Length: 239
Image (cartoon, rainbow, N blue to C red; front, side, top):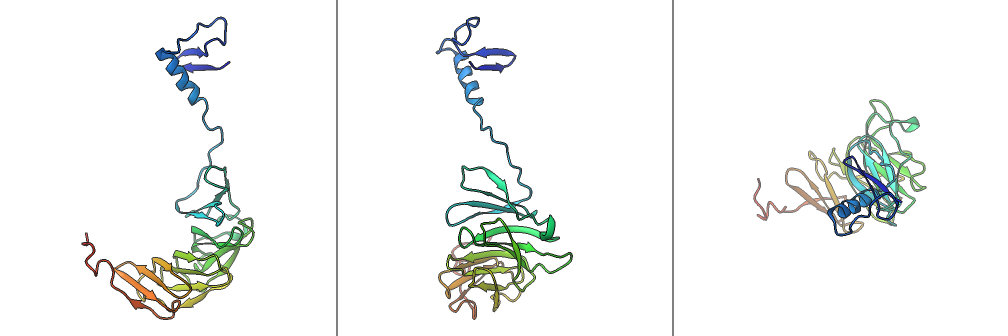
């Protein structure tokens, strides 16, 4: 037998108690009772508070989901309908403590191998030149120095272990060993930030920056050529 309390009245399902009157299925009271029954079937799982702003939803190849926050916290779930759990990468605790800790994304090559990037350091007043890498699906992480102090704005990766990063110093960084080591290629923008990267294959790609900048490379960042932007082509009018 189900009992509901609404606006001070105790309602029971019809026929559940000999001392309570039946409810006409066509009455408004019956509709209200049905609504109360629906409300009583809310999701009983507890809510998970997300600490910090989130920029991206980071999936693995099999569809597992990760969130990383600007406050240095991570969260993961097996899929969109599964429970969420706090991850082990917490940049304000323990040996991974980071004074500069904005995790903007987690990039996965496989379900096991990936790295977190953003604005990351491992020492007070030190350079923001780190990513945090995992080889066991996010159970453990370790810092990797990519050789440049900057905020990483974008990452493009492939499942064969290649990845490209760009950021606040206008750099173009490349790995072909699943993020273990990084090489700095020629900077596409000398005085602008690298905001967006897209690679068609290991050699051909384009990058974009603020201030109407788009460049293309055909040799994996060794040389760059400016190409006309949509604004240059008159595709739209500036605001």
